Image (cartoon, rainbow, N blue to C red):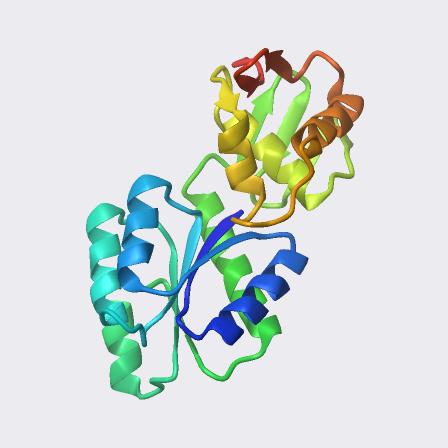
Length: 219
């Protein structure tokens, strides 16, 4: 799950990024509305966490611009503006949820889980390819009916591949979904995850397209 964090308070942004990464999320952070809109336009994340108090433009303006690009992209607002009118303005402008500062990290995680479940309901609840079944709502993966234990990154890698069954996903695309900008990642990290998945799913399920990336069968 790739999150775009839009927050100009650098110390808060760093703390949020570290906390979310510990939960297994990939998090990219920007500090301005223009940067956020640029990222959304070229490589949309799964969820946006958007602070309303940005230095270059009002957060609601950013939100409305995001909605012009995508109606489905979940947006969670963070703000010190806690009045009822402010909350209504945010939701009316297209926000999916609203979290007033200060807040507990556990509440943020819970709100994100709700958005993840909401994302899942907009897609097929289960993806089945051969003997492998991935349930998006529960996060469970089974092979021949037997549930597998996967790390969060293994699950997100497999989900990305199965959602694009029959298509080749490049290394860069897959690494973008798994890791944050600037995150220290070993050169063979993706191959290690692929190796572990092949041990659990069978060596033939994930195909290497040499020099390009990886894919899983369409059926």
